[in-house]
Length: 469
Image 1 (cartoon, rainbow, N blue to C red):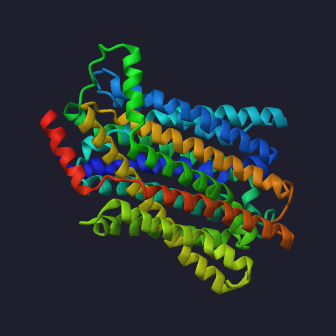
Image 2: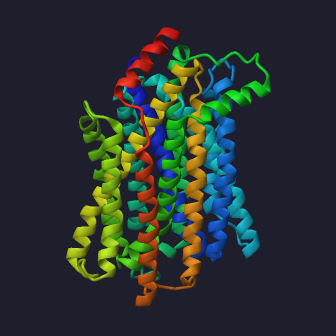
Image 3: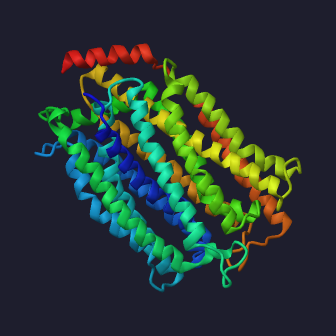
C-alpha cells in the first residue's frame, strides 16, 4: 500500500490532537487542581493515577474489539468517529470546574479524567493499529510515526508556549512567574483546545476512510472464547513484545514524573518567569521540525535498536545532568543570561530526542506486530498496541502519582502566592526530580539490550505476510 501525503496528514492530525490533550493533562492539570483550585496534591496525584489505571484496563478491551469488529466502516473507523464528541466535551469540562469541597473536587477530577481518557482510547488504539498495514516498510513506518510524533510535540509546544505567553502570562495581580495560578486562563485555553481537538480527530478519521477496502478483514470468530483468550495470551508472551513493554513501563514512569514536575522545575528550581518559559517553549517548536527532518535520514540503512539506545542515553544526559550540576554549583548561576541561553538550547535538544524516541518506539512496535502475524497468521495490531498503551498509561499514572507524592513528601507548599521558596526546598525538588527521572531512564535503556528483531528479519516477515494475503 503506497504511503501518500494524505496518510501522513491523517497521522499528523491524530498526533496533534493527542499532543494538545497530553499537554494539558501532563503539564498543567496537576498544578491547576493542586495550586489553583486547592486540591491536596496527594489527592490530585491519586485521582490521576486511578484514572490512568481505569483507562488502561479499557485499552486491551478496545484493542481486541477493534481487531475483531465487523462493520461497513471496517474494524477501526467506527471507534474513530464515535470518540470525537465525548473527548472534546470532557476535556473542556475538566477545566471549567464548579465550586466544590475537597471531596467533591477529587471525585469531579476523577470522573472527568476517566471519561476523557477512556474515550480518547477509542481513538488512539484503533488509529495506531492502522500503522502496520498503512506503512509496511521498515523505514516507511518510522517516517509515519515521525509525522505523528512531530505533530504531537509541535502543536503541544505551541499550546504550552501560548499558555505562558497569553493565558498564564504574568500580570499586576500575578507577578514574577505567578501567572500559572490564574484560573480563568486555564478555562479559556481548555475551550480553544477542545475546539481544535474536535476538528483534528475528525480529519484523522476522514482522511484514512478511503483505505478501508484495502485493510484486512477481522479474523474468523468461530472459535470458543477460551480459545481466543489462549491465542491472546500466547501473543502477549512474545519475548520482543515483553521487552518493548518493559521499556515502555520505565519510559512512561520517567515521562510521567518529568512532565508533571516540569511546570514546577521551570519557575521554582530554575527561577524562570512566564515570559522566559514561553520563549523557551517557542524555541522548542524547532525540535519537532528537526526530528521530522533528520529521523528518516538518520535511520537510512541503519538498525532501530542501537539507534534507540544511543538516543535514549542522550535523553538521560540532557534531562538529568544540568539539574545535578546546578545542585553542586557547576552550572551557570540562576538569574543569569548564560543559564537561560543554555537551558534554551538544551530544551530544544530535549524535545528533539523525545520525538525521535517516541517515533522509533512506535515503529519498533509495528515490527513486533508484523513478526507475530507472520508467526501465527493472525493480525492482532489492536491487541498488541493496546497492551503497549495499557502498560504505558499505568506506568505514566504511577509517574504522575509519584510526582504528587514527591511534592507531599518534601512538604511543597500548596498555598504559596509566589514562586519564592527556601533554598532547602529548591534543592529537595531538584534532587527528587533528577534522581527519579535518571533511575527510570537507566532501566529503560537496559531493557532494550534484550530486543532481537532487525531489518533482515522484518523484511522476511513482510514477504511471509504478502504470501498469506
